[in-house]
Image (cartoon, rainbow, N blue to C red):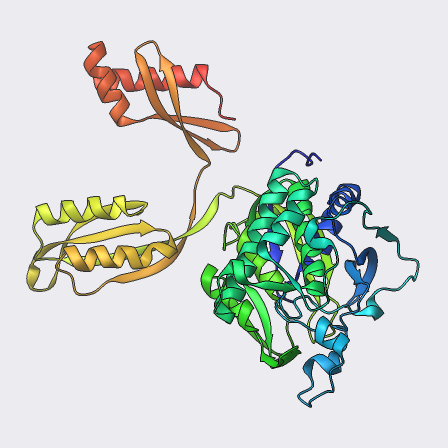
Length: 465
C-alpha cells in the first residue's frame, strides 16, 4: 500500500471533541483511499464486526460517518443510560459492552439516527475470514486481550511500516494511561474482548488513513471536553474520564472545558492526538487545501464534528513582534555587551543601545530589543539577571518584511554568503560582512571594492526562487 506521495500539514479542529471513529471519518472525508483502508482492515485477524462508511448530515453539514458495528452491541448510543445518575439493572451484555476508556466504553457513541440512507452513499468493508492468531480462538467472553495480543494482531496484517508503528504507538499510550489509572504496568492491562475489537479497528484505520494521506505534520491547538459523568461497567465516572486525563497530563495536551453535559474527548481520541501532534500553533497565514468532517454519534450542544484540514503555510510580508525597552544609567559597557550577546543567543531578532539623557542630566543608554512575542519570558530573565535595571517596557508592533534567504555563492574571489531579498519583481543582494572581510584578506582587494563586486556578481549569476 503506497501513500499518495506528497507530504502535508494536517490541522485538527477539535472544538467538538475527538474520538477514534470521528478521526477516521474525517480522514476519509479528507480524501484517504477507501480501498487502501479496506485492504488493511481485512488483513487483520479479527472477527465479530463489520464496517459502515456513510455520508451523513450533522448540524446541517455534510459529513462522513465511520461505524464499527459489533456482533455484540455495546449500546453506547443510549444517551439516557450513559449519562443518567439513576442506577440501572445491568445485564451481562451491558456489563460486557459498556467498558469505558477502552477497558471500559472507549468510543464516541454509535448514534444510529445518523446512519440513514437519504440518498447518501454507503461503503461496507467486510472483515476478512481466515486464519486467526492463537489469541483469537475460543476467547471466553470474560477474557480480554493484553497489549502483546494487540501487537500480534496489528503486526499480522498488511499495514505499511509507518501505519503499523503509529497504531502500536497509539495503543501503547492507551495502555500506559490505563495502567496508571488501575495501578498496573502497561503489559498487565487487559482490554475487554468487545471493546478491544472496536478499538483495534478505530486505531488501525486512523493510522492507515494518516499514512495514506502522507501526513507529515499535525497541528492541534487544544482539545475541547464536556463535563458531568458517564456510566461505565463500574458505575459513574467523572468527565474527562481518568484514562483521558492521564493522557492529557502525560503529553501536555491543552484542554478547554465547555458547559456541556457529556463526553467529547474519548481515551482513544486523546491517545491519537497525543501520538500524532507535532505542533500546537497554527502558522500566521496559510491556505486550506482540503477539508474533511468526521461526524460524532452522540447529540450534544456542539457541532458534533471533527474538522480536519490539509493546509499549506503561506509566507506573508507582515507579522507581529514584541518591542522591549529599558533605560540603563549605572551599567558598565562590558555588562551591556554581555547582555546583548545573551539576548541574541536566546532568540532576540535585534538588540541595540541608544544614547539618552535621564533625569538630573545623567548620560545613559536605552536598551531596545525585538523578539517574537513568545520569547518575552526568556528576554526578561536575561535582562533582570544580568543588568542593573529594575523595570521593563514592552509593546507589540506590526512590521513589514521582505522575503529573504541566505545563499552561499561561489564567486571569482571565493565562497560568499549573500542575503537575497525580494520586493515585488525587484531583487536585492546584500553580501554578508563576515564573508567580505574574509575575501578581502585573501584577495587583497579593499572591503568596499569587494562588497560591490560580489553584490554585482550575485545579481548577474543568481535568481531568487
